[in-house]
Every structure is written in C-alpha cells, then in structure tokens.
Length: 342
Image (cartoon, rainbow, N blue to C red; front, side):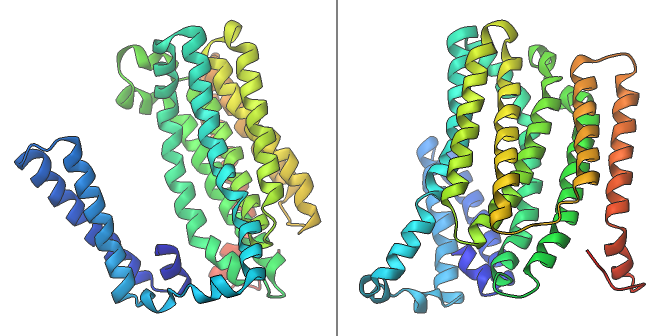
C-alpha cells in the first residue's frame, strides 16, 4: 500500500502512516512487554497493531479502498498471465540473497564451528548498514523509472541517474572502508574485533550488489524479470561453490570472498545482457577507475600493509574527486550555467 501511495504521489500520507505506525508500535510494545510482561508475544501484538494502523491510513485517508476490485483479475486472463510472468521470478530472486547468506553460514558452522559463524555475522553487520543508504536512494528514483518508461527520454534519464547513484554508492563504500577500523572499535567488541578487515571485502561486494540492483530495475521496467532470476541463481551458485571449496583452507575469509565472487558474477552477466534492452552510458572508463581504486582500498585494508590507513584515505579522496568530476555537468545544470548533456 505504501508503493501504491508512492505511485499516486501521496508522499505526505506515507510519512503520516509511517509515523503513526511507529508510535503505536513503540507505545504498545512498552505497555505489553514492560507493563503486562507478555514478552515476545507482546512484541508480535504491537507489530501487528502498528502495521495494521498504517493499513487503515492507506485504505481510508488515501482512499485506496476504491482500487480494490477483483472483477478485472477474474475476467482478464491476459492480464493475469502478464502479471504472473512478471512477478513469479521476483520471489525466488529475492530468496536467493537470503539463501546465499544462510547457506554460507551453515557451511562455516559445519566446517569451522558456531563461533566462526558468529565472527562472520559480526563482520557482516557494518556493511549491512550501507543497505539503508542504497534502499533510500533506490526508492527515491525507482518509481520515476517506471513513469519514464514510455517516454522518449528514458535512456537519458537512466544516464543521469547512473551518475548520481554510482557516485553515492562508490563514495559511501569507500568512506565505510576507510573508517572501518574505527567503526569496528565501537560496534565490535572483544573477540569480534579481530575480523574487522573482512569488512572491506564485504563492502566491495555491497558496491557491486548496488550496481546489480540498478541494472535490475531496468529489467523490471521492461517487464523482463526472467533474466534477472537467471543471473541471480548463477551468482548464488558461484558464491556457495567458492565458499565450500576454500572454507577449509581460508576460513571465514572464503565466505566473504564468496559473496564478492557471487556479486561480481551477477555484475558481469547483467552488464553484458542488459544491452539487449538498453545501452545505458555507465561511463566505462571512470567506472573502471573507481572500481579499481575501491578494490585496491579493500585489499590494502584487508592485508593491513604498511601505512594502510593513509593509502585507504588516498583511495577515498581519489574516488571522491573522480565522482565529483563526473557530476560536474549536473552541478553546472543545478546552478544554471549550461544545459546538461550526458
């Protein structure tokens, strides 16, 4: 219902529903857990009521009840077929990411023990924070991608979005890698702190995954979700096979590198295959330089070579400089200096 509200440009309604849901959930959780000692069931009750309140806001304040009509679904077989063809690959596509994480943990636990699995989970905590940034940015422009789909300026739209999106993801990733030893001191205590160098590899994997998500939106806009699933399955199999093959000799590093291998596999497949639908100007030369700098930053942080903090900072500043140069046409456009050309 939040997605429907976003499609109807009811942005204030989304904020109201989210705030109301959070307030009800928080107050009710305190009352049921702390006041009535219901424990875990109290949390579940508060979660249900909180989200239920948001549903009521969308239904009545947003008047979404007028769109609930099953006659079109029942009477239009071609529409049902089109929707099934579009949506069915998306469910296992989302599940593959969970399967990749879960099975990798099982492999680590089976070979190295549960303590090693805990260390890997701790190393994954900080890169997962970047997912918040990625989801915010992607939600901000994903709807526009569908709205612009039939317009003549679709390619230009994606070219512009790519520059902004790639700049945010690459600078954010480089910043987290540079600050990872300091962030780890705060969030990873005692024996968990020892695995902080793995953060750099997992952040590099996140960066590639963010690019994969950008390309995945193009498949969704063209209603071609089957290739989306195929690439994800190949990447998941690559990740699990790599982890299983090297976990005995490399330990939990194999799992981190496995995630990177899986993301890189999906990236290569989608970059090649996406040309059938649209030739997005992904700025190959600047993008390759950014990827190389980010990979170098990850390696020097992982092995902790001499002056690795200084080298990591140099990589961060170089990536930031390269991306600022890439955004220069957009900055000029914002200040009205000249017309933007991709």
